[in-house]
Image (tube, rainbow, N blue to C red; front, top):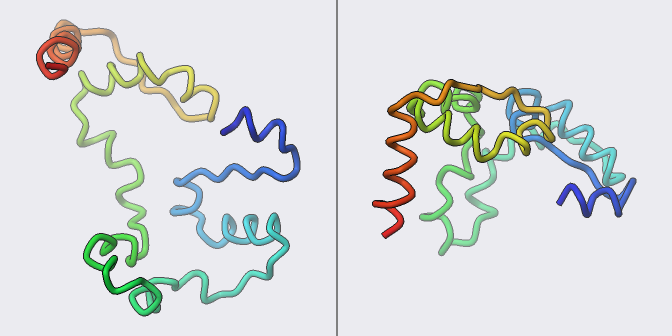
Length: 126
């Protein structure tokens, strides 16, 4: 999308999920400004009316989307994802992380990381 965004120029706005969750009002104001729409404080409390707006058949699948995002979960992966998986992810997604300004958690490729990578490539693939 970023490549398309460069073609769209001023008609493209990139929003980071982390910014939307951790600095909600400022990010929503930026989005509203981009769209040429007024900011309304009730945008900050969408979850209070979200169930009434959701199609009845969809409610069971969208319980979490009807709740305010939990800021404590934004970087939760850093404590819950095993170190070996973090190293594999960094190896694969490193250039994209750099491009989008994310801090990389570069880990040395430990023996366990190599074993896990082999496991994903050979065993889980089949």
